[in-house]
Image 1 (cartoon, rainbow, N blue to C red):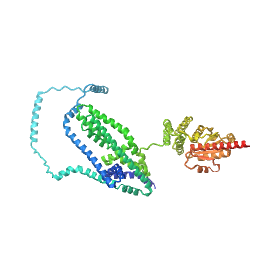
Image 2: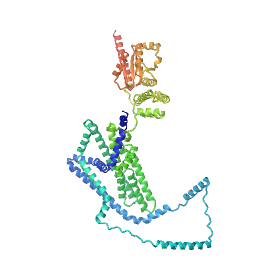
Image 3: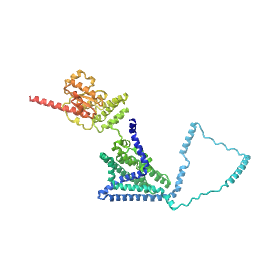
Image 4: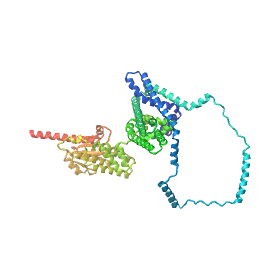
Length: 627
């Protein structure tokens, strides 16, 4: 049994390892398929638009493929032609390049050199070491020098005679045939051309057989998951298509602006550098550096001064900051759903697996992983790790900050929640769930006394600060006028969490015109019961916070019902998921009049009681007038 459980626990890691091995060893087939799939997402919207113009599928695919090929051909022709022009002009810039290099390697003069020398002297003084003084050269000894010269001459003659003995060997390469030379020349190009051909074939097939591929994926998923897989495929197609379209538009605009800026700076071949930067920026991270560095280095080689290269660098930096930090997050964030950290991490992983193609395809592939994690429960960890929706729920965040003993941040979370919600929504949606989590951890022994005391004290202090809070949002519970609100006694069922929830209920009722009082269960003496028995219109509210307060609430309800048979009893089982009527039946013989699961519901029940009492008083008054 233990071995079986260990296998089940390690199964996700084994599956992940198997997937990574498959991606690595099958990369020669998977890379063209992934590129074709990406192109399919980019070109499919154009094919669909042509089909809406009543063109047949094959005709629409052919037109889109021809237009895309023509566009890429024109771009490639412009880039190659201008690159050849730049390569032919480089020798004419040799003098300027040598001058720049000599300026860089020349010794520094002026204040900078003086500052460096001063730092060196200060460092020597502090360390107690001084620069060694050069020793004077020794006086020459003519007798020993002449003897040494004769010995050197003799040794040189012997060495020359020894070196002259071996014969020189020349290795002559056999003549290379034209076929072998062509094979050697085309060898680096054959593999990329073959991959390009596979990508084109895959892309055209996917565009023509779009529904066929979709149906096969749905059949693999099974009919029971047809709805989920349909949503997943639609979501992936929408996200990737939108991202690719925005990426092309942003990079094209980026290259256009950069090229115009270089043209205004009189940098030669400005069109080439703009087009190159727009293309290379589609390669994450590395493409941006290469595309921006090439024109700056070219400007350094062309211009004799430093100002034009500096202005080109400033133009690139300003554009990159504006696009990377403002434009791309606004356009890409809602389309990809990838967190920035996950984007960097997955780019590194895909690069390690597939090299440069993996880096280019990292974003679309990561989007597919996020969609899988969103719709496949077994892979939900992908959506959590890679997605941009990793923010904790307000109640969990509030509880986590209290556990960290960060009262300021916890109050900030509550204030932020109140910007768009009512006070009762804050109590029902944030504070009560946080207290329920604390109760569970406390009963399990996970919450120590120090943190528990801090948590309950901080929650009580925040509730006290909100006593005079009035929400700017309309509250229907407080707008309905009641002639005379009945008093309410709030009693906590057991521990401190029940007491805090009773304080919240009493506070909300006070804000709505009710006279409320908080009484602990230990204070319910016979004198208190006698006074409450004289006021049958007083509502008794017992506050209990699950999961461990139900027994205490039931015992307290039996006690109150036995002493106050005429009073209305309302029990709040805050946050319970069971229906109120079922909860009411679980109390047995001493069942309360009403059971509420939220503070908002409890307020509605109390006000309903007020309306019933007011209506009864009117009937009694009218009957008295008639008599």
